[in-house]
Image (cartoon, rainbow, N blue to C red; front, side, top):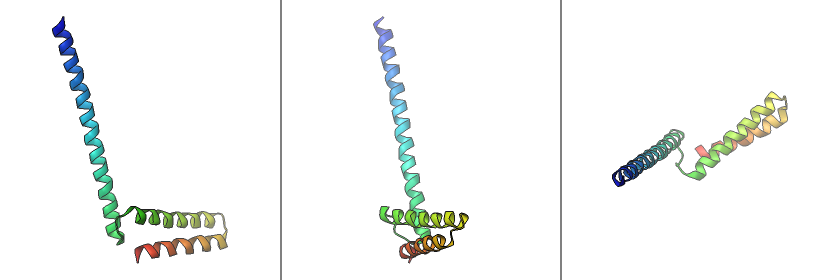
Length: 95
């Protein structure tokens, strides 16, 4: 009877170890993939691959999105303001 529970405990431990190793490898590869994506994006734009540069890039894209929404609502003055701000932020980042 003791051999059965030893086998059961060992099998359960191996299953848990397998699941933990699988999750560790998955998240390591996920992090490496995200890092590679952001490095490639930053290299193609000519910016440094830092968190601040990424935040400024997202801010500029968000401002251009607001300009597009204002254009679709036929708000021309708001479109010009949002587009000007978005292009200005992105030009600071890229140049």
